[in-house]
Length: 457
Image (cartoon, rainbow, N blue to C red):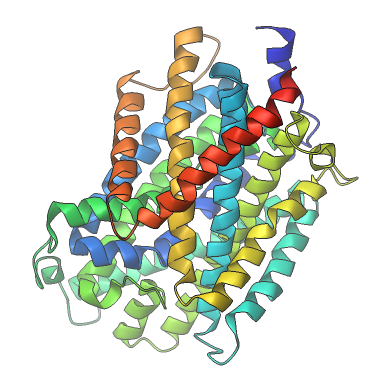
C-alpha cells in the first residue's frame, strides 16, 4: 500500500474515540429501528398483506450479509469514512467520492423523511398545528444535540434507543397475550389467512414490499461509520454488529407478526401514510391511553433516527472534507471535537422536508422513495468493494472476524439488490426514485471529473 493509500484511512483519526460497545449497539439500533418500522411498515403491508413477513425476512438476509462484509472491512480499516474510504482504496478515488456523496445525499433526504414522520405523529395530539412548525422545533433540538461532544450524542441516542426497544418488547409481550388469550379473548392467527390469504397480492406483492423492508434496515451501517470514534474498534465493532443485526431481525419479524395476527392487514396497510400502524393496533385493542403512549414511542423513534442520520451525514461529509473533495471548512473540528460545519451542511434535509410538507401531502413517501435509491446503491457498492478487498488481501489472519462462506453471501446480496433496483425502475409506484437517483449519480460523477479528481493530483 502506498503512502497516499495509507493516508485514506489515517486522515480522520483525530476524531475523539469515546463511544463504547454498548453505545455503539444502541446507536445502530437507533438508526435502524425507526420510521422504516413504525411508519413505513404500513406501506409494506399494503403491498404484501401478511406475506410482508417474507419480505422482511428477505431484507434481513440482505442486511445481514452486507454487515458481515462490512464488519470484516471495518476491522481492517476502522475510520469514520468507513465504506466510502474503503471504496476509495479498493475501487478507486472516483468510487469513494461517489459512495460518500450518494450516502450523504440519501441520508440527508432520510432526515427529511424522519422529520416529516415527526410532524405526522404530532398531529395525533395537535391536529391544527402546521407540520412545518414541528419540523423547525425538533430540527433545532437535534442540531443542538449533535453540536455537543460525541459522548453527549452517544448518551442521548442510547436513552432514545432504550425507550423504543423497551416499547417493542412490551408490544411483543402484550401481543402474545392477546393472541393466546392471556387475560383476554384470544385472537389466534386467523388474520394471517383471512381477507385474501397469506399473500393476497401474490409473490409480486411480497417482492414489492421488500423495497420498503430494505429501507427499514437502512441505517445498520452506522456502526461502521462510528468506528472512527469507538474506544476500542477492534473489539467493539464486530460485537456491536453481531448483536445489533440479530436483535433487529427479532424485533422486526416478531413485532410485525404480532401486529398482523392481532389486526387484519387491511386495517394497518396504507399507500398514503397518515398514522403509524403500531398506534392503530393499540387503538383497536381499547387499552386506556395505550395509543397515546405508543405515539410517544414512535415519536421518540423518529427523533432517534433523525439524530443518528444527522450524525452519519456530518461524518460522511467530514470524511469528504478531509480527503479534499469539499471545501476545507467541512473537514474541520470545533473545540469539542465535532465537525460542526459538516453538521450544518447536513441539516439541509430538514429544510427540504419543510418545503415538501408545504407543497405536497405525500411528502413522507416521496422523501423515502428518493432515499431508498441512494441507500440501495451504496449497499451495492459495499458488496463490490468487499469483493475487491478480498481479492487484494485474501483472508487476513490478523483479523478476529471474517465474513463466512465467502464469496456466496456477497454475491447473493449483490444480486438481490440489483433485482430490487430493476424492480423499482419498472414499478409505477417507485419509478420517481430513479428519476431523482440516476441523475444524482451522473451529476456526482461529472463533479468528480471537474473537481473531485484534483484532490488526488
